[in-house]
Every structure is written in structure tokens, then in C-alpha cells.
Length: 324
Ligand code: FO1
Image 1: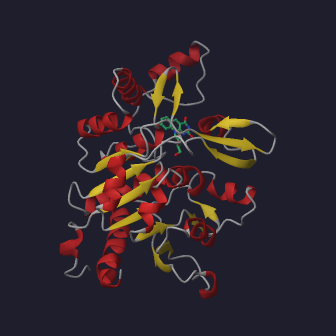
Image 2 (image 1 turned 90 degrees about the vertical axis):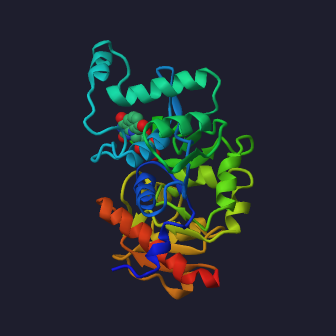
Image 3 (image 1 turned 90 degrees about the horizontal axis):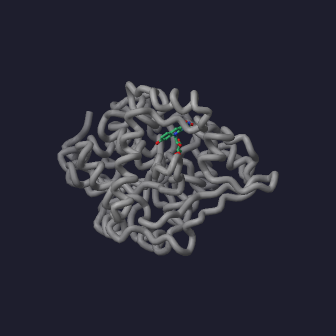
């Protein structure tokens, strides 16, 4: 099915910008297609928070567990075959259980908290834990500084991201998304170097507002991305998000949710916009001259779908690299 160019797939150097569940799927595709070491992943840390005194990094863990082949297939976060002894005991004690921490997942948070407490930077801890999980691709948190995403609701409250998403089930109407890192959190120098050294960048089908924007708004990030071929995979199909509140957020922020809206969201850095085969082709007049659109199957139900999408993007890059 794949031409002789697939021999070169593995030599490509790719950087994926990723949030949690959608990001993890895209990352697995490229991890299986590229040579170990040729994939770098820059992961959103705007969702990170402290819970029971533990440092929880949901998107980093979703990506790690997916790459290690141990993620929970139903939820996309947490571990497969998890047990809930601690969560049940916490419930008996009347402790908050709105954020479900499985027994084995807890081990990750405990060890990360111990390492951070010992003075290691988050990027060092991510590297160490990924290595211990047998992951060969390079994983970078977007920043070593904390940059929590906050949600200002139309009711006037300001919520931490996990409060909004998990505790309140993304019910409150969003007025504004506050990216706390803006201004003081810096992108990881190793991540910037990986972008400069890459053949192309892929923005995963993660929530543009709360998974990708925290990465894109770090100082200097857009400047390095603009110099590279950037592909973005739409996180909205037929006006709906595959998972999470992205479509609801677009509506509440006054934008009709559509793949066109996702393309426009990334317009500044984008060269190629990938939307799903089931979508109606975008009107020529709606596509900025600087962007080309591609249609592939973007719904990734199993490992074959993940690999096929990563291959399609890689093949497109190889076939068009002379014009890039
Ligand atoms: N998401 C939920 O909807 N409910 C949970 O109880 C929950 C627990 C959880 C524990 C560890 C972890 O790494 C992730 C967890 N998530 C949970 C997912 C997560 O908070 C969100 O999907 C991401 O922040 C969005 O990218």
C-alpha cells in the first residue's frame, strides 16, 4: 500500500504538540512509524495541579501511558486493569473523590512528587519516568515553570482547570480562558531545539483552547514554529469534539464549532490543515492562501488508525518536501 518512500519514514524528525487523550493517540501513531528517538513530543502542562499534596500531570501521564501501551482503552487517561483500593478507602473516610486516582496511577504521582521534592525539574522527572516505562521517544513538558490554565465562567467565578473539567463536568459557561503561564513560564529550551531540528511539526487533535494554546502562547514558541512546516489535525469533526468540551467552548466563546474554526484558530502558524474524510470539503474562499487542506481519516479507534494517520502525514511531507 505504501510506496518506496516509506523507507524514509523512519528517518523523519517530527515534533508533536499534544494535550491529553487526542494527543496521546496521535503520538502513538508517530512513535510506531518513526525511528526511536526521532519523535519529540511537547506536552501541555496547563492541566497540572496538586491533589492530596501530589503533583498530578494528566496530559503527560496520558501520553506516557499510551506510549508504554498501558493506558486505559475506555477513558484514554489512567491505566488499564487499574484497581481502586485507595479511592474506596478515601471515600469511606469522606475524603474528596471527584478526581479518581487508581492505585497504580497513584504510584506515578507519588514517585513524581518525591523526585520534584528532591529538587529535580519537571522535565528531568518526565524523562526519568518515561525511561523507566520503556519509552524511547523524547517527551518534554511544555515548560519547567508552572503555568496553570484557569477558566473564567459567565457566572463570574474563576476555576482551576480540573475543577472546571472534572469536578463540575465542564458544565459552567466559559467567558474567558486564562493561561496563567503567559508572561512568566518559559518554553523548555530542549523542546525549542527539537522544533528547530525537526522536519515538520504536528499539532495533535487536542482541544485548541486548553491543550494547545498553553503551548503556543509560551514566549518565542510561535516564532520557531512559523519557520517550520506545521500540520494541524482538526479536533472537531461534523461540528463535534470527539472527546471533551472543545465544541462547547467554541460556542460559548462566540464561534461556531467546525473544522474551519479550528483551522482559523491556528492560522498564524499553520501550513497544512488535516480534517476528516467524512467532512465536506472546505470552500476555497474559506481557506487562507498560506494554508493547504488535506483530508484523511482522523478518527483513531485502534493502533492501525493511529499509524495510518501518521503515515499519511509523513508521506505527504515526503512527497511535497521539495516545495517546502
Ligand atoms: N478525567 C475525568 O474525567 N475524571 C477523572 O476522575 C479523572 C482522573 C484522572 C486521574 C489521573 C489522570 O492523569 C487523569 C485523570 N483524568 C480524569 C483525565 C484528565 O484530568 C483530563 O482528561 C485531562 O486533563 C484533559 O486533557
